[in-house]
Structure formats: C-alpha cells, structure tokens
Amino acid sequence: MTVTSLSTARFVELCRTLVAQRPLVHCLTNEVVQAITANVLLASGASPAMVVANDEAGDFASIASSVLINLGTPYPERLQAMRSAIDACQKKGTPWVLDPVAAGVLPWRDRIIKELAALKPTVIRANASEVLAMAGMGHGGHGVDSTDSSRAALVAAQHLATQTQSIVAVTGEEDYVTDGNRTIAIAGGHALATLVVGTGCSLSALVAAFLSIDNNALEATAAAMTLAKRAQEKAISQTQSPGSFRTAYIDALFELTHGAAQ
Image (cartoon, rainbow, N blue to C red; front, side, top):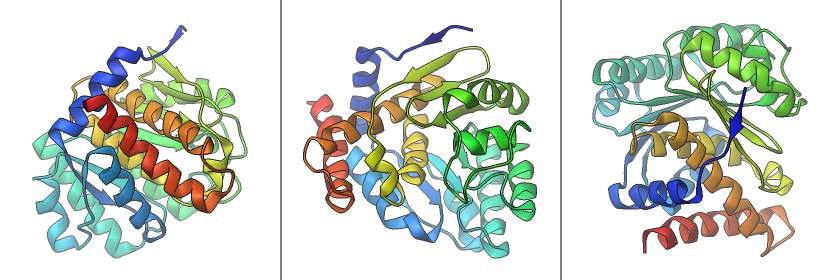
C-alpha cells in the first residue's frame, strides 16, 4: 500500500481556510486538558467551546462546526452528554472526532470506546498502543502513554479504518492518517511535546477544527497533524524545556496559520 504525503500547497490552503472560517469546535474533553485545548484552537484560528452539561450538549453540538469526544476522564454523566452530542452530529451530518484515551488498559473504558467507535466517528485520533488495542492487535500502553511505535501500528490503523469506516490518525515519531486505502505520512515534530500535558488531546481538537472546513476528511486530518508537527519544530528552536515549550508551541500555531493566511 502506497504511503504519500500532503503537499505544501494543500497544507497552506487549509490553514488559510481555517483562519478565514473560524470554525466553532465543541470539545467534550477531559478536565486535565481543557485549557491547552482551548488555547491551541484559538491560536490556530478556530473558536473553542466546552459545553458539557447533558441538557445542553446535544443542542450545542447541533450548531457547532465539529465536535471532539475525548475519553480521558469519562464518568456516567459526561458519557450521557457525549452520546447526546454524537446523536446531534449524526442527525446534522456534523464531523466528529473520537479520542480513545487509554484504549486497551481498562475493561469498562474499552466497552465505551467500542460502543462509540461503532457510531462511525469521522476520525479516530489515537496513539499507536491505542490503535493496536482497538484493532485487536495489542493490549494498550503504559496508562495513557504509548509503548509502541506508530510504524508498528500502521497495519492496525488501516484495518481499524476499514472496520469502522472512519479515518484513523495514529501519532508517534511519524504520524499516519489512513482511510484503509490511502495513507498519508507526516514526519517531523519533537519528542519534547510528549512532556507537555494535553498536546495529544488538543491535537484531536485541532483535527476536529480542520474537518469542519473541507470535505476531504483524510487531507484535512493530515493538515491538522502537519500543523502540530511544524509548530513543535518551531517551538523547539526557541526552548529546550517543557514549560516554555508549551507557550512556544501555542505561539507557533498562531504564527503558522495566520502567516499562511496573509
């Protein structure tokens, strides 16, 4: 199976569109990463919202440009809100992203992930160990951290994409985005990003933002992941420490997308 890359021209086009359209991204995400998720979306040109009450989540999802479902800290009340939001997405045709945090680690969580994956998310964005576990080819990672390489999970990602009829985006030293037939690889980035809480979860929100601006979900997802890799590279040129890297990363997202828009 051929692995291709996203052209620079297409990446720039999608960044310009993101800034021009400023999509409203409804984030049902975990409490640990809400702040960085909002900041990543704002810096990149999108508009974040965290409407989490079950009485509101479905209604808000119906007016949002896209929705993120992140299972980092699931509990019954939040799951009700997530299901309401997904139902609204299905009725309105709104793109949504499933981030199956810690798939393969805990049985209750795995049952929820399996249930939500069956609802055909537009994109499943996960690390290598999570993808392997969801595809039935692995047993999860070290808590929320991957213990497998993205390359080792590529076949699993392709299988999972075919099985769920979703785009699957697997992150690692090299990222892969696949629909089961076509696969796009994204190299680059920096390992220091793994020492900043929320870079992965906020990437899923960034994927949701890009999904809302273009009908090609595969390329839109690849653009979001390319943006994150390039911002990491830009950030590491400014600092070698995780605390300042977080700030430099957010600044780099702004500079890259808004620079493309000029």
